[in-house]
Image 1 (cartoon, rainbow, N blue to C red):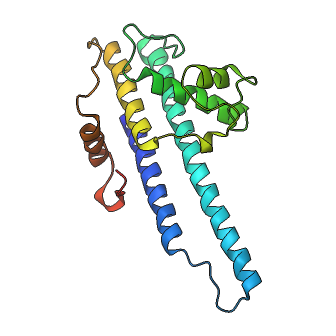
Image 2 (image 1 turned 60 degrees about the vertical axis):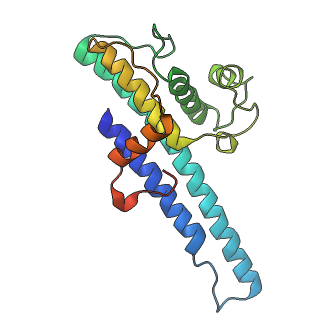
Image 3 (image 1 turned 45 degrees about the horizontal axis):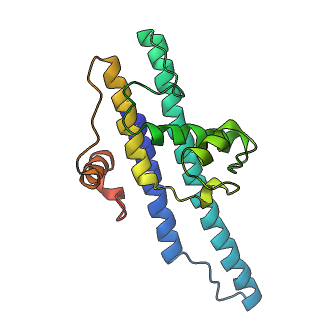
Length: 197
């Protein structure tokens, strides 16, 4: 599980760093083109950056959901244990709300064209009613801190794995921000660290 989460963290941060670099230094202007051509180039460039941002955000959610499904598979095949994420753990798993938001967001991406419409699916209804997401808006326009979300999913899934190994329920870190920095320092090689972490 840890290596999968690490891959997601690296992918998200490195791609975001690449997109930010393109946005700052991208060469869309062509001195041999006229104003109309350069206006077209600028629009194409801007559109590509938006698509890249949307892609990495959705890919991050889907990848986290896959880690959840992989854990469920491993628990069943290796430990003969059944995980049903929609049934809360007792006591609740650490950051369970964040873990379940990933579960429901992934369903919306796969089945609702990435638009949260509470009348269209149980997952959309849960996201609006329980998790505070805006009804009728696409996922990409919602305010999601992906850097924190990856870390919270890691902590939540680690808590679940720990319980299978007989450990007590984990506690929320006292200094979340400091622990978040530690997590990314551990997960991401210095060459691709982003200033946002």
